[in-house]
Every structure is written in structure tokens, then in C-alpha cells.
Image (cartoon, rainbow, N blue to C red; front, side):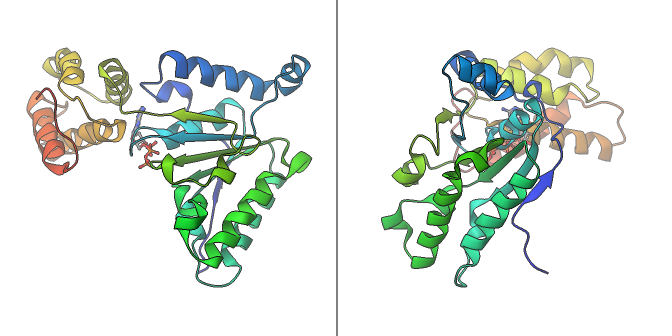
Length: 269
Ligand code: ATP
């Protein structure tokens, strides 16, 4: 079967309330960006151009994909999602043609968000990237991003763990207008993320009481790891025929997550 480059979804069900740990200046900037996207005419009258491209960068599992989905939902856009590695093809012209198809499809379903995760696989620095094919694919991406009026109603969002690897031409304003750093959450951020992932689960009373402590003792955890913590605890509770997640389930999940991580050093165990 032919590999599909993008999955278009009418409207992601994720909203900004589902993304924890977005606080302070970053939250302000995102809300401001959203208001220019929601009402571009009003913003243009004030001399503010809505962004065409946004880069989200930061460690794995911090919610970049989630945030892109939430932005699409907030502006009522169709969400086209793919990964940079889906464009790496050894056959001549295939990568470039996939880029074209992605944008053509997005133009047919405006307003739309084109989201490319791991964009470094597609828009890496040309010298390091290597290969004529990769260069052609990147050039096609730049051409599509420069689409002028045909790109009205399209917001491009790219995500990466390696901003330093990206080609300068790709990062140029007009292609990428804003870069948002999505860091590992601090204690307050972890508290928010824990609340998000705990809210639809049945928790024993002692677990409910321990959630604040959990945020404090999970320094260095990403949102994805906090999510996985609750998934593991829930599965154990179901396996044991319980009706609620117990403190033992959560401790078990915590041990599993800590053991499973080879990169993180717990600062306050
Ligand atoms: P990668 O860089 O590996 O692509 P990412 O930054 O895009 O990762 P996501 O794919 O958005 O991370 O996160 C994976 C899952 O982890 C989410 O679907 C969600 O369940 C949980 N998660 C991650 N970050 C957050 C967050 N900030 N708030 C709530 N949940 C989060």
C-alpha cells in the first residue's frame, strides 16, 4: 500500500485546556497569536500580520503535538499531521511531490493547519543534511511555504527536539514567524498535567491526597511520562480487579517509569 504522508482530521478534539504547563509569557504569546489568527482582518487593520508559520521546539514528550492540535481546534482548522521522516525517499522527486500534495490537500480544506513533527528530518541544515534528494525536498517545502496568497487560511506548525539542526532558510521570518520553546514542566506545570490526566480516572482517596506530592517528586518528568504513569497505574488496577487506582498502583507505575528512563536524573526522588 502506498504510504500516506498526512492524516487530515476535521477538528482535533484537543483544546488548550488539555495542554498543561503552558504558563506565563508563553501562554500570553500563544493567546495573542491565536487572536490574530481568529480575526485576521481586525489584526491587519492594527498592522499586525497573522503568522504563517510557527515552530515548537523542546524535549520529547512535552506536548508539542498536543499544542499544535489545540491551536488547530481553537481556530477551527482541519488538521493535517505528518512527520518529517515521511518525506525521506530514495526515489527521485518523491519527497518533493509528497510536500506538494500535502499543501495542495491543505489548500482544499481551508482553514487548515499543516503540522510536521520531527521537522529536522526534512528541514535540517543543508550542508549536514546531505544528498541531492533531501535538498530538493527541502527546496520544495520552502517553495510551498512561500505560496503567497494561496497560503491564506493555512497555518504551518513544525515541531522539533533539535532546533539547532534546522536550516536558516527554513527559519526565516515569513516561513517561521514565531518559535515557542516547550520545555519540561516545572512543579506547577506537572501539577496541571497530573490534574489533566487524573481527572477522568477513578482514584482512591489516598491517591487524590498524594497528587500534589506526586508533582513535587517527579522532577524531570515530561508530560508524556506523567501520562504513561497514569496509564500504567490504571492497567494494574484493572488487572487486579480494583474499582479505583490505589497508592500501590501509582508507586508501581512510578518505579516502572523511573526504571524505564535512561536519560533522566531524578533531582528530588
Ligand atoms: P515528541 O517530541 O516526542 O514528538 P511531543 O512534544 O510532540 O513529543 P506529545 O506527542 O504532544 O509530545 O505528547 C505525548 C502525550 O503525552 C500526549 O498525547 C499527552 O497525553 C501527554 N502530554 C505531553 N505533554 C503534555 C502536556 N503539556 N499536557 C498534557 N499532556 C501532555
